[in-house]
Amino acid sequence: SPSCPDGRKRRVCYYYDRGIAGVDYGEDHVMVPRRVDMAHALIRSYGLLGDMSRLRTRPATYDDIAAFHDRGYADLLGSLTPEAFAAGGEAELTARSFNVGEPSKKEDPRSVDNPPIAGLWDYCCRYAGGSLAAARALAAGGYDIAINWSGGMHHACRDKASGFCYVNDIVLAIRELLAAFARVVYVDIDVHHGDGVETAFVHSGRVMTVSFHQRTNNDFFPKGRGNLADVGVGEGVYRAVNVPLYAGMDDEGYYGLFQPIMEKVMEVFKPEAIVMQCGGDSLSGDRLGRLNLSIAGHARCVRFMRSFDVPLLLLGGGGYTINHVAACWCYETAVAIGKEIDDDIPQHCYDSYYQSQGYKLHYTVKKNLKNDNTNHHMTQTKNTVLRNLDKLAA
Ligand code: V1P
Ligand code: CA
Ligand code: ZN
Picture (cartoon, rainbow, N blue to C red):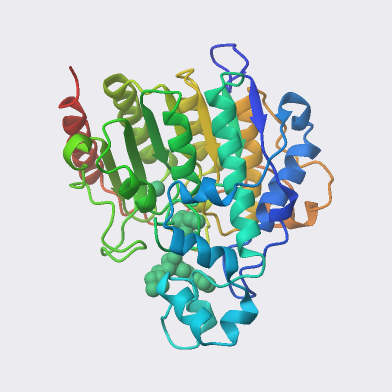
Protein backbone atom coordinates (compact mmCIF):
# COMPACT_ATOMS: atom_id res chain seq x y z
CA SER A 1 0.00 0.00 0.00
CA PRO A 2 1.26 3.54 -0.66
CA SER A 3 1.49 4.37 3.04
CA CYS A 4 3.94 1.55 3.53
CA PRO A 5 6.23 1.66 0.49
CA ASP A 6 8.93 -0.42 2.15
CA GLY A 7 6.33 -3.06 3.04
CA ARG A 8 7.38 -2.91 6.67
CA LYS A 9 4.99 -2.52 9.55
CA ARG A 10 5.94 -0.35 12.49
CA ARG A 11 5.33 -1.04 16.17
CA VAL A 12 3.08 1.87 17.13
CA CYS A 13 1.98 2.99 20.59
CA TYR A 14 -0.76 5.52 21.10
CA TYR A 15 -1.58 7.78 24.05
CA TYR A 16 -4.97 9.27 24.68
CA ASP A 17 -6.13 10.66 28.00
CA ARG A 18 -9.89 11.23 28.22
CA GLY A 19 -9.36 13.94 30.82
CA ILE A 20 -8.40 16.37 28.05
CA ALA A 21 -11.66 16.28 26.07
CA GLY A 22 -13.62 18.41 28.53
CA VAL A 23 -11.10 21.22 28.92
CA ASP A 24 -12.61 24.56 27.96
CA TYR A 25 -10.54 27.58 26.87
CA GLY A 26 -13.72 29.67 26.83
CA GLU A 27 -16.68 30.17 24.56
CA ASP A 28 -15.01 32.49 22.04
CA HIS A 29 -11.65 30.75 22.03
CA VAL A 30 -10.45 28.96 18.90
CA MET A 31 -8.59 26.17 20.73
CA VAL A 32 -10.97 23.24 21.26
CA PRO A 33 -9.39 20.29 23.11
CA ARG A 34 -12.43 18.17 22.17
CA ARG A 35 -10.93 17.86 18.64
CA VAL A 36 -8.57 15.24 20.15
CA ASP A 37 -11.55 13.26 21.41
CA MET A 38 -13.05 13.56 17.90
CA ALA A 39 -9.81 12.22 16.40
CA HIS A 40 -9.81 9.39 18.94
CA ALA A 41 -13.43 8.45 18.18
CA LEU A 42 -12.60 8.42 14.47
CA ILE A 43 -9.49 6.29 15.02
CA ARG A 44 -11.61 3.84 17.02
CA SER A 45 -14.39 3.78 14.42
CA TYR A 46 -11.88 2.87 11.69
CA GLY A 47 -10.69 -0.03 13.85
CA LEU A 48 -7.17 1.38 14.17
CA LEU A 49 -6.92 0.85 17.94
CA GLY A 50 -6.38 -2.86 17.24
CA ASP A 51 -3.21 -2.08 15.28
CA MET A 52 -1.50 -0.16 18.09
CA SER A 53 -0.68 -0.60 21.75
CA ARG A 54 -2.67 1.82 23.81
CA LEU A 55 -0.56 2.45 26.85
CA ARG A 56 -1.61 3.98 30.11
CA THR A 57 -0.60 7.60 30.62
CA ARG A 58 0.48 8.69 34.04
CA PRO A 59 0.00 12.46 34.25
CA ALA A 60 3.29 14.37 34.38
CA THR A 61 4.44 15.26 37.89
CA TYR A 62 5.56 18.64 39.22
CA ASP A 63 9.18 17.46 38.96
CA ASP A 64 8.69 16.32 35.35
CA ILE A 65 7.45 19.81 34.48
CA ALA A 66 10.03 21.64 36.58
CA ALA A 67 12.78 19.79 34.67
CA PHE A 68 12.34 22.54 32.06
CA HIS A 69 9.97 25.14 33.47
CA ASP A 70 10.71 27.83 36.02
CA ARG A 71 9.47 26.75 39.48
CA GLY A 72 7.67 30.04 40.09
CA TYR A 73 5.77 29.52 36.85
CA ALA A 74 5.03 25.84 37.63
CA ASP A 75 3.75 26.91 41.08
CA LEU A 76 1.42 29.43 39.43
CA LEU A 77 0.06 26.81 37.02
CA GLY A 78 -0.43 24.43 39.94
CA SER A 79 -2.36 26.88 42.08
CA LEU A 80 -4.31 29.18 39.76
CA THR A 81 -8.09 28.83 39.56
CA PRO A 82 -10.48 30.88 37.41
CA GLU A 83 -12.15 32.06 40.64
CA ALA A 84 -8.91 33.32 42.19
CA PHE A 85 -8.05 35.09 38.94
CA ALA A 86 -11.48 36.72 38.73
CA ALA A 87 -11.26 37.87 42.36
CA GLY A 88 -8.29 40.00 41.27
CA GLY A 89 -5.46 40.86 43.63
CA GLU A 90 -2.28 38.82 44.00
CA ALA A 91 -3.42 35.76 42.01
CA GLU A 92 -4.39 37.84 39.00
CA LEU A 93 -1.17 39.87 39.07
CA THR A 94 1.02 36.77 39.36
CA ALA A 95 -0.90 35.03 36.56
CA ARG A 96 -0.52 38.05 34.28
CA SER A 97 3.21 38.22 35.02
CA PHE A 98 3.48 34.73 33.49
CA ASN A 99 1.30 35.67 30.50
CA VAL A 100 -1.77 33.77 31.76
CA GLY A 101 -4.90 35.89 31.27
CA GLU A 102 -2.35 38.20 29.70
CA PRO A 103 -2.93 41.93 29.44
CA SER A 104 -4.06 42.87 25.97
CA LYS A 105 -7.02 44.71 24.50
CA LYS A 106 -8.76 45.57 27.76
CA GLU A 107 -11.56 43.27 28.84
CA ASP A 108 -11.99 41.68 25.43
CA PRO A 109 -12.11 37.96 26.24
CA ARG A 110 -11.41 37.06 22.60
CA SER A 111 -7.96 38.55 22.85
CA VAL A 112 -6.88 36.34 25.77
CA ASP A 113 -4.68 33.67 24.24
CA ASN A 114 -3.89 31.89 27.52
CA PRO A 115 -6.94 32.07 29.75
CA PRO A 116 -6.86 30.96 33.42
CA ILE A 117 -8.95 27.88 32.60
CA ALA A 118 -10.61 25.51 35.07
CA GLY A 119 -8.48 22.40 35.64
CA LEU A 120 -5.38 24.08 34.19
CA TRP A 121 -2.75 22.07 36.08
CA ASP A 122 -4.55 18.77 35.47
CA TYR A 123 -4.75 19.58 31.74
CA CYS A 124 -1.03 20.40 31.55
CA CYS A 125 -0.05 17.24 33.44
CA ARG A 126 -2.20 15.08 31.18
CA TYR A 127 -1.02 16.34 27.81
CA ALA A 128 2.61 16.52 28.97
CA GLY A 129 2.28 13.06 30.58
CA GLY A 130 1.27 11.63 27.21
CA SER A 131 4.28 13.10 25.42
CA LEU A 132 6.65 12.00 28.20
CA ALA A 133 5.28 8.45 28.20
CA ALA A 134 5.54 8.37 24.40
CA ALA A 135 9.17 9.53 24.54
CA ARG A 136 9.98 6.93 27.22
CA ALA A 137 8.42 4.16 25.10
CA LEU A 138 10.68 5.10 22.18
CA ALA A 139 13.74 5.47 24.43
CA ALA A 140 13.13 1.99 25.85
CA GLY A 141 13.19 0.59 22.32
CA GLY A 142 9.91 -1.30 22.37
CA TYR A 143 8.23 0.85 19.71
CA ASP A 144 9.08 2.47 16.38
CA ILE A 145 6.41 5.18 16.48
CA ALA A 146 4.64 6.80 19.45
CA ILE A 147 1.62 9.11 19.09
CA ASN A 148 0.13 11.78 21.37
CA TRP A 149 -2.31 14.03 19.48
CA SER A 150 -3.01 16.12 22.60
CA GLY A 151 0.63 17.24 22.76
CA GLY A 152 2.60 19.58 20.52
CA MET A 153 2.30 22.79 22.56
CA HIS A 154 5.29 24.41 20.90
CA HIS A 155 5.01 28.04 22.09
CA ALA A 156 5.23 27.54 25.88
CA CYS A 157 8.39 29.09 27.33
CA ARG A 158 10.46 28.22 30.40
CA ASP A 159 8.74 30.93 32.42
CA LYS A 160 5.60 31.93 30.57
CA ALA A 161 2.57 30.78 28.63
CA SER A 162 2.23 31.73 24.96
CA GLY A 163 -0.07 30.98 22.03
CA PHE A 164 -2.53 28.70 23.91
CA CYS A 165 0.42 26.67 25.32
CA TYR A 166 1.18 26.50 29.04
CA VAL A 167 3.62 23.60 29.45
CA ASN A 168 5.99 22.74 26.61
CA ASP A 169 5.49 18.97 26.38
CA ILE A 170 7.76 18.87 23.30
CA VAL A 171 10.77 20.21 25.18
CA LEU A 172 10.09 17.73 28.01
CA ALA A 173 9.82 14.84 25.53
CA ILE A 174 13.01 15.82 23.67
CA ARG A 175 14.92 16.03 26.97
CA GLU A 176 13.71 12.51 27.76
CA LEU A 177 14.83 11.26 24.33
CA LEU A 178 18.28 12.83 24.81
CA ALA A 179 18.90 10.36 27.65
CA ALA A 180 18.79 7.51 25.12
CA PHE A 181 19.68 9.07 21.76
CA ALA A 182 22.73 11.12 20.78
CA ARG A 183 20.88 13.50 18.44
CA VAL A 184 17.20 14.37 18.03
CA VAL A 185 15.60 16.25 15.14
CA TYR A 186 12.42 18.25 15.72
CA VAL A 187 10.22 19.03 12.71
CA ASP A 188 7.21 21.31 13.00
CA ILE A 189 4.53 21.50 10.28
CA ASP A 190 2.09 23.59 12.34
CA VAL A 191 1.33 26.83 10.45
CA HIS A 192 3.02 28.77 13.28
CA HIS A 193 6.71 28.95 14.12
CA GLY A 194 7.84 26.50 16.83
CA ASP A 195 9.46 29.30 18.85
CA GLY A 196 9.35 27.69 22.31
CA VAL A 197 11.17 24.58 21.12
CA GLU A 198 13.69 26.50 19.00
CA THR A 199 14.55 28.78 21.93
CA ALA A 200 14.97 25.86 24.34
CA PHE A 201 17.57 24.18 22.09
CA VAL A 202 18.99 27.13 20.16
CA HIS A 203 22.45 26.54 21.69
CA SER A 204 22.32 22.76 21.44
CA GLY A 205 24.47 20.69 19.13
CA ARG A 206 22.35 17.61 19.88
CA VAL A 207 18.94 18.92 18.86
CA MET A 208 18.12 20.30 15.44
CA THR A 209 14.82 22.20 15.17
CA VAL A 210 13.10 22.67 11.82
CA SER A 211 9.93 24.73 11.41
CA PHE A 212 7.83 25.37 8.32
CA HIS A 213 5.44 28.26 8.96
CA GLN A 214 3.36 31.03 7.49
CA ARG A 215 4.79 34.51 7.22
CA THR A 216 2.57 37.49 6.36
CA ASN A 217 3.89 41.07 6.52
CA ASN A 218 6.15 39.89 9.34
CA ASP A 219 3.28 40.10 11.85
CA PHE A 220 1.94 36.53 11.79
CA PHE A 221 2.11 34.98 15.27
CA PRO A 222 4.67 34.63 16.85
CA LYS A 223 5.72 38.02 15.57
CA GLY A 224 9.32 38.37 14.42
CA ARG A 225 10.24 34.71 14.87
CA GLY A 226 11.23 32.04 12.35
CA ASN A 227 13.26 34.09 9.89
CA LEU A 228 15.29 32.29 7.24
CA ALA A 229 18.37 33.91 8.77
CA ASP A 230 17.74 32.45 12.26
CA VAL A 231 20.08 29.46 12.22
CA GLY A 232 20.99 28.79 15.86
CA VAL A 233 23.71 30.02 18.23
CA GLY A 234 27.12 28.70 19.37
CA GLU A 235 27.16 24.88 19.33
CA GLY A 236 23.73 25.14 17.78
CA VAL A 237 24.76 27.07 14.66
CA TYR A 238 23.05 25.65 11.56
CA ARG A 239 20.99 23.43 13.86
CA ALA A 240 17.96 25.71 13.77
CA VAL A 241 16.22 25.67 10.40
CA ASN A 242 13.42 28.05 9.43
CA VAL A 243 11.26 27.86 6.34
CA PRO A 244 8.91 30.86 6.10
CA LEU A 245 6.04 30.50 3.63
CA TYR A 246 3.42 32.88 2.28
CA ALA A 247 -0.34 32.40 2.29
CA GLY A 248 -1.96 30.02 -0.18
CA MET A 249 0.84 27.42 -0.21
CA ASP A 250 -0.36 24.22 -1.91
CA ASP A 251 0.63 20.54 -1.52
CA GLU A 252 3.08 20.55 -4.39
CA GLY A 253 4.97 23.67 -3.31
CA TYR A 254 5.06 22.55 0.33
CA TYR A 255 6.42 19.08 -0.41
CA GLY A 256 8.85 20.59 -2.92
CA LEU A 257 10.48 22.29 0.07
CA PHE A 258 9.81 19.69 2.77
CA GLN A 259 11.21 16.66 0.95
CA PRO A 260 14.64 18.00 -0.10
CA ILE A 261 15.14 19.91 3.16
CA MET A 262 14.27 16.98 5.42
CA GLU A 263 16.29 14.59 3.27
CA LYS A 264 19.30 16.86 3.72
CA VAL A 265 18.64 17.25 7.46
CA MET A 266 18.64 13.47 7.88
CA GLU A 267 21.81 13.14 5.79
CA VAL A 268 23.93 15.76 7.54
CA PHE A 269 22.60 15.63 11.12
CA LYS A 270 22.01 11.85 11.34
CA PRO A 271 19.45 12.02 14.17
CA GLU A 272 18.73 8.90 16.22
CA ALA A 273 15.14 10.02 16.91
CA ILE A 274 12.58 12.30 15.25
CA VAL A 275 9.93 14.40 16.97
CA MET A 276 7.27 15.70 14.58
CA GLN A 277 4.72 18.34 15.55
CA CYS A 278 1.75 17.80 13.20
CA GLY A 279 -0.30 20.95 13.86
CA GLY A 280 -3.44 20.82 11.70
CA ASP A 281 -3.64 24.59 11.18
CA SER A 282 -1.50 24.29 8.05
CA LEU A 283 -4.50 22.57 6.38
CA SER A 284 -6.68 24.36 3.85
CA GLY A 285 -9.63 26.19 5.40
CA ASP A 286 -8.16 26.61 8.88
CA ARG A 287 -9.67 29.36 11.04
CA LEU A 288 -6.24 30.92 11.75
CA GLY A 289 -3.86 29.62 9.07
CA ARG A 290 -3.96 30.61 5.40
CA LEU A 291 -2.04 27.74 3.81
CA ASN A 292 -3.83 25.42 1.40
CA LEU A 293 -2.63 21.89 2.22
CA SER A 294 -4.87 18.86 1.81
CA ILE A 295 -4.89 16.06 4.35
CA ALA A 296 -2.98 13.96 1.80
CA GLY A 297 -0.36 16.72 1.43
CA HIS A 298 0.03 17.11 5.22
CA ALA A 299 0.22 13.34 5.75
CA ARG A 300 2.75 12.95 2.94
CA CYS A 301 5.22 14.79 5.19
CA VAL A 302 4.51 12.32 8.01
CA ARG A 303 4.96 9.39 5.63
CA PHE A 304 8.27 10.81 4.47
CA MET A 305 9.63 11.12 8.03
CA ARG A 306 8.39 7.60 8.78
CA SER A 307 10.31 6.23 5.78
CA PHE A 308 13.69 6.86 7.49
CA ASP A 309 12.94 4.10 9.99
CA VAL A 310 14.23 6.15 12.91
CA PRO A 311 12.19 6.20 16.19
CA LEU A 312 9.41 8.71 15.55
CA LEU A 313 7.29 10.69 18.02
CA LEU A 314 4.13 12.18 16.48
CA LEU A 315 2.47 15.06 18.30
CA GLY A 316 -0.53 17.29 17.63
CA GLY A 317 -0.49 21.09 17.98
CA GLY A 318 -2.69 23.75 16.43
CA GLY A 319 -5.71 23.19 14.21
CA TYR A 320 -8.85 25.28 14.44
CA THR A 321 -11.30 23.82 11.93
CA ILE A 322 -11.85 20.84 14.15
CA ASN A 323 -13.46 18.42 11.68
CA HIS A 324 -10.44 18.84 9.37
CA VAL A 325 -7.99 18.35 12.23
CA ALA A 326 -9.64 15.19 13.56
CA ALA A 327 -9.80 13.69 10.04
CA CYS A 328 -6.15 14.57 9.48
CA TRP A 329 -4.84 13.03 12.71
CA CYS A 330 -6.92 9.90 12.12
CA TYR A 331 -5.46 9.55 8.62
CA GLU A 332 -1.94 10.14 9.96
CA THR A 333 -2.50 7.45 12.58
CA ALA A 334 -3.28 5.07 9.70
CA VAL A 335 -0.11 6.25 7.91
CA ALA A 336 1.93 5.51 11.06
CA ILE A 337 0.49 2.00 11.23
CA GLY A 338 0.97 1.49 7.49
CA LYS A 339 -2.67 0.87 6.65
CA GLU A 340 -4.77 2.44 3.91
CA ILE A 341 -8.21 3.48 5.21
CA ASP A 342 -11.44 4.16 3.35
CA ASP A 343 -12.40 7.73 2.51
CA ASP A 344 -15.96 7.16 3.83
CA ILE A 345 -16.19 8.13 7.49
CA PRO A 346 -17.79 5.30 9.51
CA GLN A 347 -20.88 5.99 11.59
CA HIS A 348 -19.82 7.09 15.05
CA CYS A 349 -20.68 9.56 17.83
CA TYR A 350 -19.22 12.65 16.09
CA ASP A 351 -20.17 11.87 12.49
CA SER A 352 -22.48 14.90 12.14
CA TYR A 353 -19.35 17.12 12.31
CA TYR A 354 -18.32 15.76 8.91
CA GLN A 355 -21.54 16.52 7.04
CA SER A 356 -20.00 19.64 5.42
CA GLN A 357 -17.30 17.44 3.88
CA GLY A 358 -19.77 14.82 2.62
CA TYR A 359 -18.71 12.38 5.36
CA LYS A 360 -15.37 11.95 3.54
CA LEU A 361 -12.02 11.93 5.33
CA HIS A 362 -10.30 13.78 2.47
CA TYR A 363 -12.24 17.04 2.12
CA THR A 364 -11.62 19.25 -0.91
CA VAL A 365 -9.12 22.11 -0.62
CA LYS A 366 -9.85 25.66 -1.78
CA LYS A 367 -9.63 25.88 -5.57
CA ASN A 368 -9.46 29.65 -6.05
CA LEU A 369 -7.16 30.65 -3.20
CA LYS A 370 -4.30 32.84 -4.42
CA ASN A 371 -0.89 31.25 -3.82
CA ASP A 372 1.47 34.06 -2.77
CA ASN A 373 4.51 31.76 -2.98
CA THR A 374 6.32 32.45 -6.24
CA ASN A 375 8.61 29.82 -7.73
CA HIS A 376 11.41 32.34 -7.25
CA HIS A 377 10.70 32.66 -3.51
CA MET A 378 10.49 28.90 -3.02
CA THR A 379 13.72 28.21 -4.94
CA GLN A 380 15.58 30.93 -3.01
CA THR A 381 14.31 29.62 0.32
CA LYS A 382 15.22 26.03 -0.51
CA ASN A 383 18.70 26.92 -1.75
CA THR A 384 19.48 29.08 1.29
CA VAL A 385 18.42 26.31 3.69
CA LEU A 386 20.31 23.59 1.77
CA ARG A 387 23.46 25.75 1.66
CA ASN A 388 23.30 26.23 5.44
CA LEU A 389 22.85 22.50 5.98
CA ASP A 390 25.82 21.77 3.71
CA LYS A 391 28.01 23.52 6.27
CA LEU A 392 27.23 20.69 8.70
CA ALA A 393 28.29 17.97 6.26
CA ALA A 394 31.54 16.37 7.40
O1 V1P B 1 -1.78 37.15 17.78
C1 V1P B 1 -1.89 36.75 18.93
C2 V1P B 1 -1.59 37.55 20.16
C3 V1P B 1 -2.53 38.56 20.66
N1 V1P B 1 -1.35 39.48 20.85
C4 V1P B 1 -0.97 39.74 22.19
C5 V1P B 1 -0.52 38.55 20.11
N2 V1P B 1 -2.28 35.50 19.22
C6 V1P B 1 -2.60 34.48 18.29
C7 V1P B 1 -2.06 33.17 18.86
C8 V1P B 1 -2.02 32.02 17.91
C9 V1P B 1 -1.55 30.78 18.63
C10 V1P B 1 -1.33 29.57 17.75
C11 V1P B 1 -1.02 28.33 18.56
C12 V1P B 1 -0.51 27.13 17.78
O2 V1P B 1 0.69 27.40 17.09
C13 V1P B 1 -0.18 25.95 18.72
C14 V1P B 1 -1.26 25.42 19.55
O3 V1P B 1 -1.42 26.73 16.80
C15 V1P B 1 -4.08 34.43 18.11
C16 V1P B 1 -4.80 34.50 16.94
C17 V1P B 1 -4.28 34.65 15.58
N3 V1P B 1 -5.17 34.80 14.61
O4 V1P B 1 -3.11 34.62 15.36
N4 V1P B 1 -4.94 34.28 19.11
C18 V1P B 1 -6.17 34.25 18.56
N5 V1P B 1 -6.10 34.36 17.23
C19 V1P B 1 -7.39 34.06 19.31
C20 V1P B 1 -8.61 33.98 18.63
C21 V1P B 1 -9.78 33.80 19.37
C22 V1P B 1 -9.72 33.69 20.76
C23 V1P B 1 -8.51 33.76 21.40
C24 V1P B 1 -7.35 33.95 20.68
CA1 CA C 1 5.72 25.31 12.08
ZN1 ZN D 1 -0.38 26.82 15.08
